[in-house]
Length: 158
Image: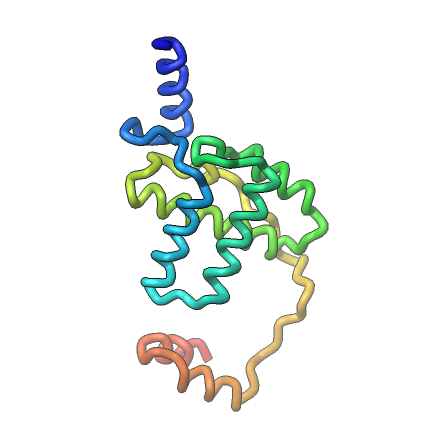
């Protein structure tokens, strides 16, 4: 009916879904396209698999099936339920979702990232692994395996 159409249009606008789309794009197919794009842009398989897995885990917990379903409350509920994970790990999940949602914004699929204002978990003083310096041999291998521009940054920072 006309009323249902108006209500749906208002929901789309509030969720940041462009009016040309219906917001019913399945997250699964959008994530697959995102991962394919990451692969073409040269990202590593481990990174791509992690991103896909992180998005899938949160989406399943929050019961997000379509792009219009994505909301801050769903992510926050997932984060509360997984509070035993390290803050850095929780932030990696948020980073993956934000990368995906920002990619959708860049493509014009959605107008705004609905998780943009979700605060990151505090990591200062909560590291579980003690950081250490690289050995000379490790530093040498890092320099040799890095692109020239990046190796300059490493030399300056050392």
